[in-house]
Length: 363
Image 1 (cartoon, rainbow, N blue to C red):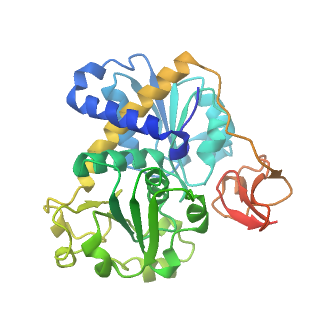
Image 2: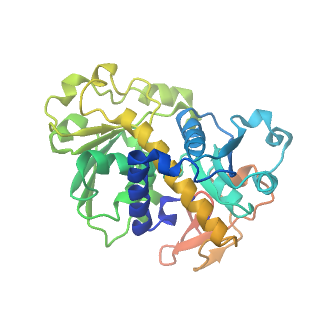
């Protein structure tokens, strides 16, 4: 039995198999209508969500299963101080699989280490969002017919955009991917994401602040919302929120077969005038997300039936235990019983990384 916390928990072969299963589900829905009969999905959403929560619930219902859970932490024992670890142990007594969203980075990982059922990360802070990545990959494959030989521009909030982090990590494993990172300096891609990109990958990478200058070369434009909930300083959010607004005029030099993606919700970064443009694919992403979550739920439940033993994360490497994580969004800031553990990622430069939220620091 294993969980999916990071997109790298799935091999390329497994991702491709999930894509194939999702395509079959789209073509033959009745074939899967009883696949999870008698099974229960627990949706543990400690942070507000519409699309992701309802997508998971719709996915389980269409597989013939049932759903229990909550959509707000204030209505749970978490408001009384119960830890993520204890919540996960309790829910394991009621359900067959967990989908967890949490504002603290690393919370689903903690859950996976304590639950006796599979855990799917439905988004943790600005960290990972693997099922959105699966939805993105299915949309790209559906619309472009391939997951290689592509130039993809990520635009907007690349610092806190967990969907961006996960998709970059996933696409690095395919051939000839060219990344163009478009953002204000304050919202650039975090160093830990750049440093995790494999050096032997077949891709290029560059940063810019000018969306219109790179528009003609893009095969995919992935717009993101500047997320108010990730800012401690509201004035900083207000200054950056309108940094990029996609309008029909800005699409004039774009390729005719460009596809425009967005994980939603949008605020005003994509004009509603673009919704009828055939290149707008963000609502198709929503539909595709349901099918990819169906495929993943089915895979993990079947694996758990075949092998109920919990699969632990790879523990190879050197670990440090005397350092405190400085990330205010890390799960260790609220779960005091967690050991502060850092993995050494560069002995030469004396850099280690929090095992929960990936924050790096010198030691």
